[in-house]
Image: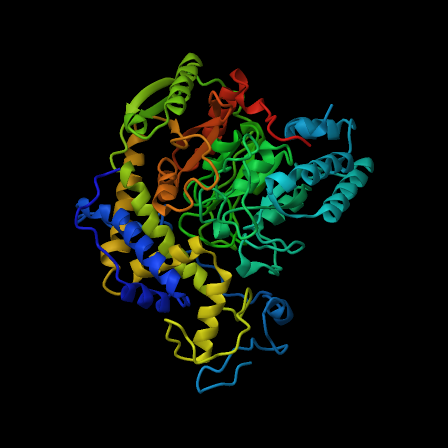
Amino acid sequence: MPAQDNAEPTLTREDVLKVAMLARLALSDAELSSLTDELSQIVGLVSQLSELNTDDVEPLAHPLDSQNVFREDNPAPSLKTADALRCAPRHDGECFLVPAVLGESGSA
Amino acid sequence: MTLTTRSAAELATALQQGETTSVECTTAFLDRIEATNPTINAFLSIDRDGALAKAASVDAARAQGKSLGPLAGLPVAVKDVLCTTDQKTTCASKMLKTFEPPYDADVVRRLREADAVILGKTNMDEFAMGGSNENSAYGLVRNPWDTDRAPGGSSGGSAAAVAADMTPLAIGSDTGGSIRQPAGLCGITGLKPTYGRVSRRGLIAFSSSLDQIGPMARSAKECAMLLQTIAGHDSGDSTSINTPVPDYLTDLEKPLQGLRIGRVAAHFSEGLDPEVAEHVEQTFATYEAAGATIHEVELPHAAYGVPTYYLIAPSEASSNLARYDGAHYGHRWDGTPSDDQGINTFDSPLVEMYCRSRAEGFGPEVKRRIMLGTYALSAGYYDAYYAKALRVRRLIRNDFTQAFEKVDLIGGPVSATPAFKLGEKTDDPIAMYLVDLYTVGANLAGIGGISFPCGFTQSKLPIGFQLQGPALSEPLLLQAAHQYQQTTDWHLQRTTAISS
């Protein structure tokens, strides 16, 4: 492997907590501590890429440089409502049920 | 003769000639699974009734002289990352503990149409994230060659199942080496096809620009049989390649005269186990003796493969796994919102449900990768991490393109060491990530790679050899591996470390 960069970026607990909220993950205090350490190490590993000059290199998002694929806009059967709802933790036969988005309570 | 030690090709002949029936054959493998799975834990679910019903219907059709599919009556195991309508699909995660998919994966559909008998669903690292199969929410998998060691991952269940004669054929998926590395560590053959050769429809997404499904079996010939069935265009996967599927069996017997195989000196630098190095070098010599020529090539950015992979794969994973929200399917937190949010700040009861469902449903490695990917894609870091990795990805692909101007295939090790001890790397994510050193390049470049056994250590652990080839070089990869297996018998050796 290439040499480790001496100036490793280090994540703080606040950074990690912010990312956890973006990722919609509730964390315990112990998880926050271990993730802060582990993510700092991993970010150190991936930061090795900064050694490379890529100013003239185009990003490659997809291995085959594939083109978008179009089809005729014809109606076709799709998943039936009952099938789509079958694995839902909570539903009323027509809709997925979730806790209230606004307000204090109203958990479904 | 014991049915479970016979190859799929031999079984196919025996079935056609009426020496055995699919019911007899399927029963033998199911019994073998029942006897060994408590030790190996290669299967998460076993569909005895479904498998025997399919076997009986194939036998009946055969008796009536009806035309049958190319895998008629042959048992196959499917990694639990592929959707099946008749069996739960868990991805080895608590998140999908009760998930019953509403449709079959395209690969599963093709297996059914080929009249294969699906024995069950194999264990794996949760959401295919890992290189040891220790990240399964349903228990680790043991390597059949030494049950104190890991089988590799993430397709560790499929690899162990083939190695332990629980199935002749298995389906795996490979995002950064997840077919090739466990194949190497378990002494079997595994092919990662070119990106897009096999439809990803119904493959539970981990990293969509890297994921590819492929065959795992004892030999290259059996992998060719299985690839023949699962490869092909699918309008349900917009990244599926729309070119005809060649006959993978026709070229297998052709000699290797004139084949140019590349050797990368950097593969043999520090960190490569001496016994692995010795057998890999010996394999090059075997190829030379068979008429191939060996040429030194360079992959100058190969050392950056792991860091590139561990930015791109987690970034795509963080986006793909956002679908597990506790609302549509999968695990849902069933607590009641309280004032005690711990260190978290939930904006609403809905957000709390999301966050707690995901916290309960995902295991530690999946959380790590979601966090890493979310970080790499977040405002202020996107260019430094994700976009940077995409640029290096192009450099890595260009390395392969240039190397394949000089050689037909590139050979080398699959893993730096033989199977490692269970628990050895579980506390060190970085050490576990470096396991992927030799395999991530093929995924980043979208090319094909095959892993097959090329020897054993003194302590009787399998050693794998990897061949990588340009896009759509599957016929050549399979031919080269098959020809090697015509002059060696490493792939035929069976473990004695487990009893049935």
